[in-house]
Length: 370
Image (tube, rainbow, N blue to C red; front, top):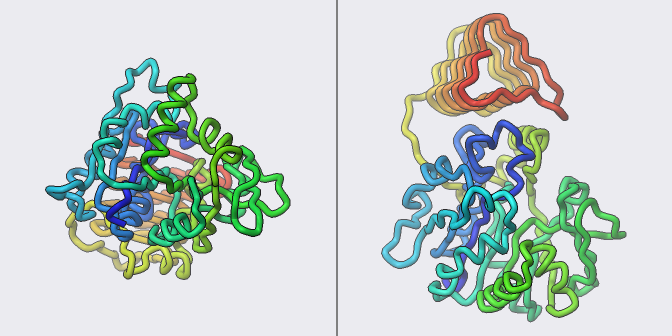
């Protein structure tokens, strides 16, 4: 797929994640102990043979730029092409009202200068593992103008921000709806679109000239009448991060052995920024069940059905269950955490009780002391 350019959109819908995205873009959201959300899409592109990847940004992009760096961990620090972080051209007043068409128009120079024939346009709010080459093969075989990667995952079908497709037996898209599905046998867009670069550039220019801002509404939705839009089904596991509860749900799904084995398939590795730390220390009274524990931690209490990031301390007598505790947080003695999400460097003091619900977990912001 060296004739394909990858574009990963990072800048919309962050407000639905509340405090978790107050200081970072959703693409930089930590997940599964040591990864960021963008790692999954970026690794999929690299494993597919894509060597030119652009990452347009809007706001709160410092954490994302720090994580991606030169692209070395993804083998994208190259003399020819590689990883390009594309800072926003928008000012603060317009950044909140623009659409993805405006972002793409702002990086039009990068699109035009790239020599690739095709564009793989993706979001950065999904967890899955795939090789995109099957999507390109499908696109060419069906003579499509735009090919949409789709799923029948019920979380996508019921999402209020979902894109639902009604397809014929030949996979050609007949109708598109926004919101929860109402078609008899719908497929949901995974936010992954494959098309020729020339077509994308023409569509962006036309939308800008007409004052349109949204790729879904102004290109895809109206494209079913003018273009051949096809749906390419994806049958693997895919997790959608579009709310705090879905972040908890999809994180805990990775505790299931079958899901973990599929997502972290060694044949298609998920790469991330490497941080060397000492192994985790488990004290004599530590109890750990069905959890993911990153390196550099000190565990002296009980951890169940939880994900613990690097450098976390769980003191003796504390119980952490059904929770996510991010990097460098400290759980002091006698604490009870259940259905809680702690951002980086949170301190929970002695004998505190934080109890939420799976559908409505408690969220503690970065650097807080409870």
